[in-house]
Each structure stands twice: as structure tokens, then as C-alpha cells.
Image (tube, rainbow, N blue to C red):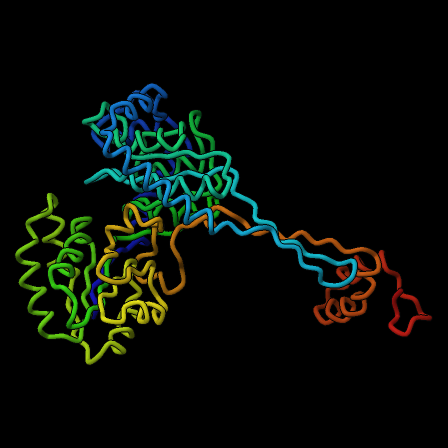
Length: 422
């Protein structure tokens, strides 16, 4: 019964399949045709020229530049702390297993550019990839008619600011296909990350295996767990701030206070006109939003855990203690002075988060998204001999005698040994 936009990625697969095939077969020519068809503009090329990136950075509003620099600094602090060192474990004398964290070689980062521009998404994708040590980064964002067919200038400036010089004016499913198959201008990538619309999500599902993906991101969502002491002005503002993203955004308030319910409804009506994206706000609040009245905060925790919000705010007297009891959420925002907007821009956390209830089993984008754990196994002769009999037993139980033989050609059985091996 809880609100959540229905996103039928499966039904979209057949829509985007011919688009992806066209890109695979015709490369850049297909991308330019598709830009003209879907974005209403034909860029001069799919790759953004260096001089366009440079100009975007030069023209960037100094206040926006300072904000992006501070956002990147804070994100780098948090994501650097996520980087695990390699760990060597001695399993037995002469036998070690080392867990080595190896970055993906090349990644494609998708930055949305539909209703609004998202330079913050450049920061959230690029910084963890750089911290992970990815050697080759490419960013793509939809071309815009108002910018000579290039992506939004603030997105371009954010790329230049972070040292990303490989940027493409390609959006939608065709952008994911470009990264998967490559073109004459874009080398294929190993991993694609970043949020997008349903067509981007469908392309990720279709091409998963050819590329790795972070997640099939859906419409944004916020859950707010609040008690009678919560400020209704804050609660209403936070609901509306998520609603302005998308008509399909989901906004949920869970509370044990009937008085707060009444006050929030009054405040929502008072504040709803503050956004420039009024259509999105009205659509989201009317279609995918609700207030849930519960008996107590324990019941409220059950509700928000079941809903598994992308963003969960806790506005209660004991917010920090309740936050530690939450199992399912993409990110948790604790107390009056940690709204989701802070996480979107300057908290240092990552705003690319699991949606649609997938927070039950998935986490947000992080340094680990760009790393692979590789085990390095080193055993000497004595260490292998020590386990040879056990390999005999397990290989025999699985009827994989060639597995046993691969050990025994190195460690022949010794009939004089009590254990049967040297």
C-alpha cells in the first residue's frame, strides 16, 4: 500500500534494443542521428572538444565553482577513507592468501541532463572513481539545443574542474550502448555508473555482462520518520525538495503524531509553490506520496525498513539511536540539521543511491564500486602437501579426479607415510 512509482524496466527493453543495436552497428553516425531524433539537436561530434570544456570552466560562476570545489573536497575525504589496504593472511606455514583491491581499468560515467542539470552527479561519480585509482574516465551527458548541441555548461565545467577531459554529448540508452560497444571516438568501458531515466536503466539491464553496472536507478524517493517534536516546516520542505526532482518521485512521512500530520499538510500546501519545477512537485505529491500514522516509533521503524527508502530522514527526539536500528536505507540523515539536500551536495557522502526498495540488498555508489577483490594464492611444496589428503577426499566426493591429479602430480602419494602423502 505504500507509494512507489511503477517502473517497468522489462517492458522498456524491447524499445531500447534496436537503439542499442544501431549503435553497435553504426557507431558515432547512429549516435548523431539519435541525438537529432531524441534531443532535437545534432552535435558537431559526439566527443566534446577540449576548448568547449575549457570555456565552460572559465565562464563558470565563481560561487558555483567554489561550491563544486568544496563538494569535491568533502567527497574525497569520505571516499578516501573507504579505500581498503591489501591484506595478506598466512593460512599455514608456507601458505598465504593476499586480498588485493584492483581498480577497474576504464569506466563510463552517466550524468543526467533532462529537466535540470546535475553537476553534483559529476562529483559523485568522478571522485570515488579517481580515489579508487581508475586510470581511464569518460563522462557522458545529453546534448542540449540551448548549448550548441553540447551538454549543459555547468556539467562540462564540473568535468573540467575535476580533470576529466573525455566527455561525450550523448544521452539515454544510446549512451550506455556507446560505452558498451565503443565507437570510433569512444573506446569501450568495463563499467558504467550513474543515475538516469528508465531508458538508461533498461540499457544497463540489456547490456549487463558486456559491461558491469552499478545499479538500475529509478525515480528518487525520501522517507521521513518523525515524532511529535519534529518541525513541520522542515518536514514539508524536505518532502517537497524530493518531489521537485520528478513527477515519479516518492515521498513518505511516517509518524506517530496526528498533530504533526495536520501541521505538515498545512505546510506542504504553503510551501509547494516554492519550486521552479511545479509540475514535478504536484505530480509527485499527488501520485506517489503518503503519510503513514503508526502507533509508536518501533512500528515506524518497521514501516521504513520495509519500504527501504533511497533517502531516509529521522527527525525524532532520539534520532541517532533510532538510526542505528535501521536496516534498509540507501542513506540515513539524522536530526534537524542533516536534510537530504545536504547529502545531495556537500555532506561528503555519495548521492548515487539504491532506489525502488533495492536498499534491502544494495548500497550506494562508493570507492568499492570501482574496485575488484582479487585473491593472490601462494603456497610452497610443504604447505600443499599438508592439504593433499583433504583435496583427495573433496575431489573424490565431487568426482573431479583431474582436480586431485593436478595436486598429485606435484605431491605424489607416499605409501610409507601415515597420511599417504609427502
